[in-house]
Length: 140
Image (cartoon, rainbow, N blue to C red; front, side, top):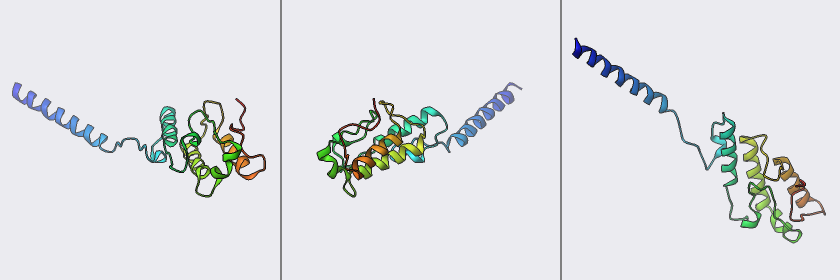
């Protein structure tokens, strides 16, 4: 009797581990290279995915012109033309902003600017005589 109960417990434990394996086999790690492929059910995961979007850097953007959590576009008036060139840093930055928008629609930067504020700053800086002045349009 004792052996059959022991045997039954072992079988039960084996099925439990097998069931857990089947459930967890569909779980995948976060995609840091393509954050828009992450499943963003929880707000914390949305923030992490937005951060991963910001880690997507480009060789066309100097370190000074790479968008960070600060929300500050460090583009001075004289640097605007190069920043706005086709295939340049403005396009890359808009791609990062698109990524952020897809994973966390209500994202805001440390300076309280939204994705739309940064878009507007780029559009005005690249397409109007006002140009860039080293800051974003959003007042700190």
